[in-house]
Length: 186
Length: 200
Image 1 (spheres, each protein chain N blue to C red):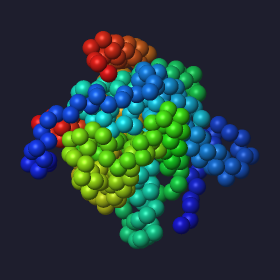
Image 2: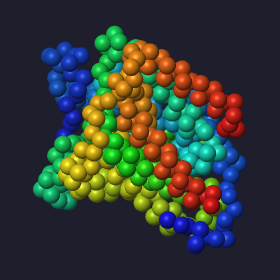
Image 3: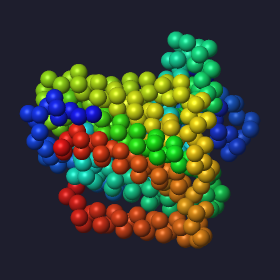
């Protein structure tokens, strides 16, 4: 995975701090997410977690295309695909972020993030789409294998002091840092 | 497409006479409301932004870790307190050492490539980052590929270092209260150090 062979002209390190930071204090936002997780435990008997929703959608699409094959797979047998709390949660995230970005004048409406564009050029739409797709694929496989993602393990699992969640989130940041360094800092 | 509605798991806290469908749609509505709050906070916290997420992985911008650790400290104290008064059930995921490590590393690699994780990617879409659509497509495809391999993985990989629902207070020779308070204090200390030493 070495983009530098193809983009050797753009070897300059891009500084992420030159772009706008968060609108609110990260401590305040984090504390409120902690309170929100108390609400989801109390009112919904569920921990916050995002990755499961995508597996539900995958199973629903699979049932449309190849119903009997999809039902024969262990994961979908154990976790029947349906519109449940998790899918609604992720749908809500899109809406909530839209409201937040709109209220703060931070709607982007663009394909290439500014920092990506500075690194990989203005004509890298296809490369960005492929890399984001492959990244999504790795994350989904990794999250299902590890049992959760940055929210399910990284917040909900670690706050319950689950040993596996701490192992998973530490590995997430190790893997992420290595690949991000290869992409941006080499 | 027929939409199957999930039976609410919180039925026990409600009148049995309440129609199952009402409870199920209430559960779906709560999911949507909690999701909207989560997405609002993620965007305001800056973690729907490409450069903030990549900046964390490049160890230049510590916003992501600050948000996560603050959520963990507050949630850890709050949820263990609620659990102490038997107001909530815990949802501890099993520790399967090989799967946690390999899955975590693979997830991390994908996280760097797309920059958005499953929750922040949905927030990035709401914010208008159109490249998150490719990540969402990849998430759906990758979930199906995992399902194809799920029989083999659960048989061959999940069994390696399978410790069940293991928690830190099971491992340490200390009481749960002490471990919760100690962890919250330690993570708060990490946050203080980050605040003093990082630019953002």
